[in-house]
Length: 343
Image (cartoon, rainbow, N blue to C red; front, side, top):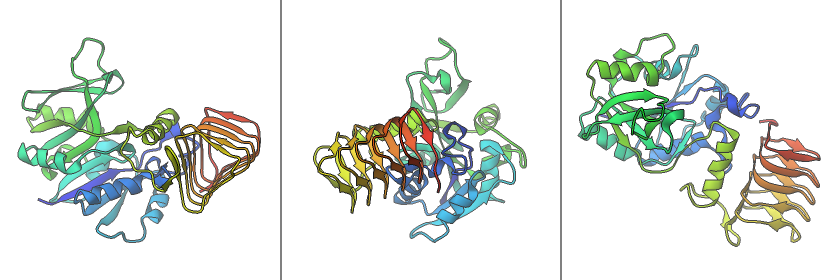
């Protein structure tokens, strides 16, 4: 049976406003490239050739971005007519009478799992649903999943209290679903696959399995976690590759970037193509500058991600912040902020 991926990419991303006020969260850049681009490319390397993007918020941005055909993959769009929740979105995006195995992913979670291994596990177990799991230190902010000795899901514990379960496995936001299971999801209304559908499947005796996924995993839904992702990449703790030539220890520089001889780069630093760093600027550590940015004379940046075409003025100090597309910072001190510009 062939596999079709459904990428859930229609969430509001409210905790990243104003950056995501008009931009869908899966489209925010990771080292200068929209995460959704990286996710699609990763799926192609795992042999996925059919992808449906489930959209609502910011749908026009995604449709325009993927308007041109891409080699090796057929991308379709399913635009929710109203908010349908994760379960309703899956049912809607699957279409009428699907015959393929469905690989469903929350598209706003950065992960580097071996997707083909997950699909193989699903088929070897003759599972009807397989849930990708990740181990965390404290599952109380999520929902713990308990497994039997043969990896079948025993029960779900939503936001467990101390001592309620020994499991530290939580839903990683990735599922393999046989199309026949979709009949358990009501059509046309909001449905949570996590809180409503999966418990119903267990009660009905559906073969629901869980598998611990190996690799990097990060929900990038807040400023601090988005910055942590880039820190992990720059420190070599996340296997996402930084493009550009390496200039010294942990300094990446894109084509056409201009760095003043009097500027100080404190690694790790990623500098995108065409970006200019002026005299006396101090950049780093853990700074990502997108394409065609400008850092003014004497500016200071640390623990900052700057998106394409943004500029930081002379003498400005920016720390622990995200600067959006085309934003202009003229002066002062910016700390713990998210500043939007234009797209």
